[in-house]
Length: 66
Image 1 (cartoon, rainbow, N blue to C red):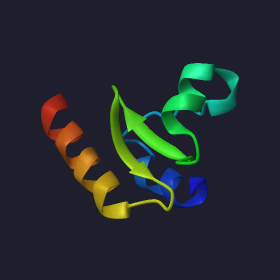
Image 2 (tube, helix red, strand yellow):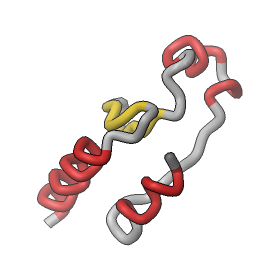
Image 3 (cartoon, one colour):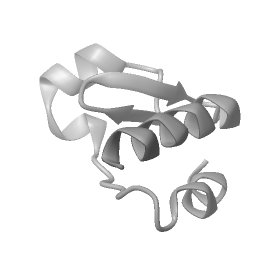
Image 4 (spheres, rainbow, N blue to C red):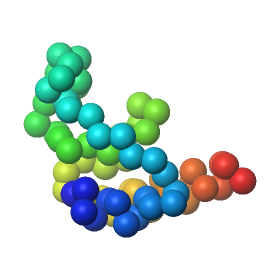
């Protein structure tokens, strides 16, 4: 998933990788739905990567920043 995601977000968004198993609340929230792409509490995509959802998110984010 990461190999597909990185080229899409390069220069458009920052990526922070977190280990879901490092916190009980994350493990409970995401369970088997990892990997997950999330921004400000909004789930953008779960595995497998939903390229359309990521593109829509990036387009909205770019519009908001301008």
